[in-house]
Length: 303
Image (cartoon, rainbow, N blue to C red; front, side, top):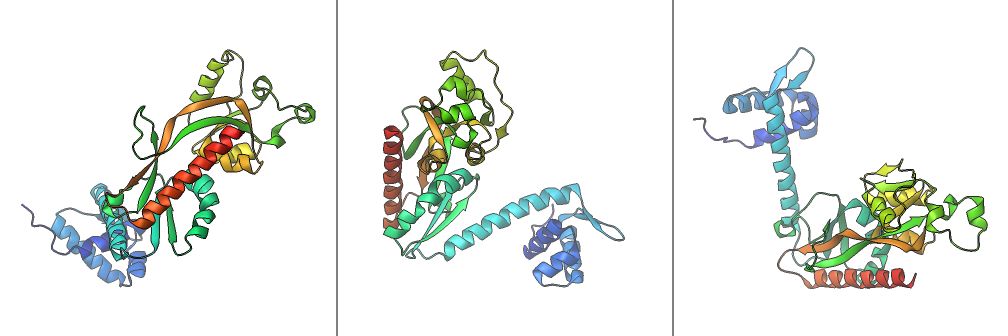
């Protein structure tokens, strides 16, 4: 049985060398000599009992086992950096770390955040926008705003039950529709390209509801994120069924218009996740989030 690793710093050198696939570049990043990196990798290989790299005359190539180990070490070091950063944060400081999706951060949170900072200029806001699920209880953030499927009857930590709005850019309309004193009806809007995220299932539901499923439609453009879908609609690429939270800012600014009698209840929602203990500043931010959602709902209902 092999002895456990005694020198974990060797893993740091290995992760860097694996990332660059070069002892020379790893040495430059770690402020060591290439010879020292090479010696440390060799020592690690001896402790592990298998090769991490294949040495060639002019280059390195990582082995299959080396690649698997590099992935694990990279993840562990990433978690360690996050934890250390969290521990460095004094519990009494004035920072607030928020984790949410790219689309929510870009299209909902950031356009409204100035209103919160005006109320609380002393709070240092830090937004981490990615689709990775993080755990506030482990110190990775103070609050996570999660986009997830809605379960009927479960309102725990619910921030917003999403709804889908049919929207389009005024620039999309042809001259006949632009000259009309009334907004175009659904039948006319369906002549334009129908944009969607992932799959056209929402369009199919809407078309079924209006008895229009059997007609020919243009489903040529698909987008990976709701934020991209909204931007495509703003750019007059076509008509889209948009999540209200992601599209609301563009509706309010007139970059998009919507058809009031064509909308769907989404299967998704936003929920708030925090550690069990909430600070005063965190409760203040959560109250502000709910107030902003109420304002958005009032705007949508008025429209």
